[in-house]
Length: 446
Image 1 (tube, rainbow, N blue to C red):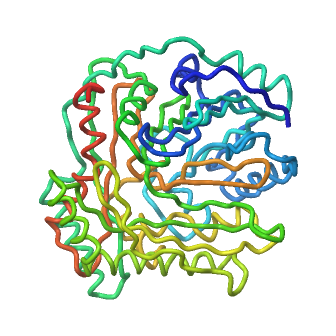
Image 2 (cartoon, one colour; image 1 turned 30 degrees about the vertical axis):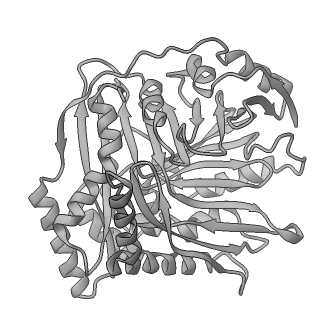
């Protein structure tokens, strides 16, 4: 591993010359999220993508690439990523893992899953204001270093998006929630996550980097990402970890998942905010929903973890962000020695928090009700480091920008249980969408 420290510059300034460069990606938590590293990758030596032609072997190709690149070299910095794979797995990728599952096709002109294989990365410690380039070869890190910006960054504000539409009216969404409740009563499943997709347009093309910068400016979400492709971009501002793989004692690996279920808006003052937080913590519907998904994720982990190693580190813990309160649980286990990344995806994907329980039955109902695919939304976005670590977010609070930069899609949803109230569920989707919609409708303004 080769690495060097470079002069500090803000991650968005460093990424600016790569704006619009296909397969150049920026992993960057919200600007007010504490203790975060930002990561820039570009110029992949190879790509691994899920297409109709390789649905039966793409995970095998993924594992083969990871195995061929595995490195035991000590990390040159505390950054979680130095070289490896970065990308996403779309929601419909489960069809390749469950051949009997017939899901609606993704409406986006993007691969069903895409990973770039990167020999270098630029990493930025935002707490210490130090920056580095690291990689497997001098040529790779030099190419990336020379592509980085190092001057003042004054991005044009993104244009104003308007003409808000949704694939559901309010009454139709509430009717869909009622239909799910009835199917739960009939014993088809216990919970299903139903989403509506909000669509906006702009008269002027949008630079996705400028939009991502506006989204991140007042965010404390831990898993922000800008992924750029020839046919469009994915902008994510997710607060939810799907899974993380990290070293454990004795040379083992621990996998941790952190499902979020349960949401309340923030209050207008300290008193109302505390009341809403306590209301969420004590709400039987939200707690039951969270516990149900925690149980589902525990069961999924048991497929790849050592017997007796799974533990509940937190159940229904309050997570307070700048715009919402959430309930989050945290479950972990020690991976079996032979378990691969492909095995973890086969066991866990997609996250139970955005599908339902039982997972396949819930996803069949979701497809019937939503009548359209989800694409990257509700899939997974993250990285696999050559040293064996991995970290993926659930792709919620995520928007897709088309290749022309004029059309934005913002899906938002919520988990439906027997105790759900259709009107409240609709309102929850609006609460979740508010931050992104404010940025789109104000042209990136505060």
